[in-house]
Amino acid sequence: MTALARARPWLLWVAGGVLVLALPLQYSGGYAINIMINTLMWIVFALSFDLSAGHVGTVSLGHPAFFGIGAYLTALLGPRLGLGYLGNTLLSASLMALLALVAGVAFFRVREVSFAIGTLGAVIIAQLIANNAYDLTGGPLCVKGIARPEFAIPFTDVTLKVIHPLQYYYLLVPLVVFTIVLYKAMTSSRIGRAFIAVREDEVRASAVGIRPLRYKLLAFVVGGGIIGALGSFQAQYVTVVCPSEIALSYTLNLLIIVFVGGAGSLRGVLLGSVIFSVLPRLLEQGGALSIPPAYQQVAYGLILILVVLFMPDGIDGQIRRMTDKWHRSREVEVGEDV
Amino acid sequence: MASEPLILELRNVFSGYGEIEVLKDVSLGVRKGQIVSVIGANGAGKSTLLKTIFGIVQPTAGQILFDGKDITKRSPLEALKIGISYVPEGRTNFPAMTVQENLEMGAFIRDDTRAVAEEIDALCRRFPILQEKRHTSVGNLSGGQQQMVEIAIALMLRPKLMLVDEPTLGLAPILVKEVFRIIQEINQSGTTVVLVEQNARRALEISDYGFVLELGAIRFQGEPEVLMHNTEVYEAYLGSR
Ligand SMILES: Nc1ncnc2c1ncn2[C@@H]1O[C@H](COP(=O)(O)OP(=O)(O)OP(=O)(O)O)[C@@H](O)[C@H]1O
Ligand SMILES: [Mg+2]
Image 1: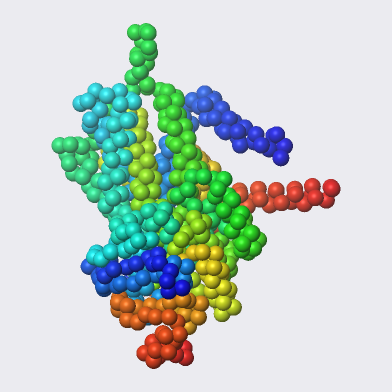
Image 2: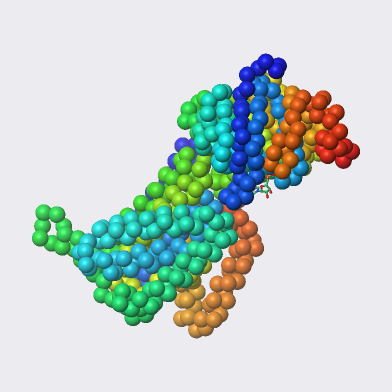
């Protein structure tokens, strides 16, 4: 292996990091920066979902509940407790991790399909509550006027108020980095091997001394906590929280990102998040070319079908197959040279 | 042989799944160094017996002793630590992982990576098919090869007692023979084996002792020759099938 080839993963990460940090400076206009924030949010959302769905094999359709409830917690408790951005985020994260623990203990008793349906039910109930508990959530009138994050700059009297989308973008980056690092650390360790073992064969996993419930809960709780934090960010970003934040359409998008991108693969989920956040917006741009919205959706559907047909193992699987082929053909060439 | 001490003993064990009682007052002893077969019809409770010994199912009454020590209340993890390993029934491996990775999973509870690597090397020398397919995903192996891997996973911790549930299920006759040969070889290198089999005749042929389980209770037991010459056992389990 050449030094370049060995360094390549690092170079990719560095290049990706520079891109993530520099791109919004180039395109800080309203529309583009919104797409970029949206993309980062989907990365966090999808990675936390994939911990369970891709690695442990427990597909919870209820992830939006953690997001929405996390957002409501910040909207409702934030002003009362007077917590700052970090406090709000940590509060939502820890309470959603706790909720995931309780829900996990309850739902993991049942088998996969029942689990998926059960978590689906939880989202519907959470949305019903958000819609109907007027005194608490304001129902469809939403909770409005959530405080924007403020940061006191040390040793000065200056407080920095986060207002501009560009500022929100950089506020979100640490959560993205934290999520990626945690995801990578968990999945490439002993814990990650236990995850896969549980996914591949629960009975055999128990036979080698792994407690499946423990690892299912671990992935679910970590995922729930991360999404809770993301919900809190959302509340402080749009400053309004509505029942529609607990939306099943989020679940649909998660399934597309993770399973078309490449379940259980960091690269696949990252690519899926970027592609399926940007693609619908690009198609919307078609609106400018006077393509009616219905056709935009048809186009999106068609693209999905084509991807699934031509890349049965997802985008990541396709890339892996192509790089494998490339490596093999290179080995042959090298072999002939000798 | 009969003078060997008991490595495993069940005393009046009852167990099952919640309301469903499967094992009813099972008492049995397994002598160190032997191959012991458990035969019985579908649903007799053979798998439940192994799960109860390994700790996946907890007994509701009775006592289980291992090497003379009471292990009635133990988790699978503790069972592994004291030297009991378990090969579940059916295709039970990690198909997306390579043979190497499957074997590593067999030693999941051990932290010493170098010792684990040496153990894998040793197993690969012992069973050449593992070496040959070492870096192939187990999902891409034949049924017989997968069974080999499944047994090898359970050998990673050098168990004193290995519980094997229907290892020949769905295998071609020639592979059935091979699996039995391997179980004999494992036994000869010092591991006591409790073998659950549908293939009763073949199982008894390699066994030192046998139990016949009916409706969750031990109906007959004895040395293979005795069982084979018992007309009831013969007609129910060994006759032309
Ligand atoms: N997880 C479970 N939950 C509830 N009942 C179970 C469970 N597993 C097995 N049983 C029941 O316990 C009884 C004994 O099952 P067991 O699997 O021990 O039989 P077996 O002798 O291994 O049969 P086979 O030869 O078909 O493998 C059966 O009536 C079965 O329906
Ligand atoms: Mg069975």
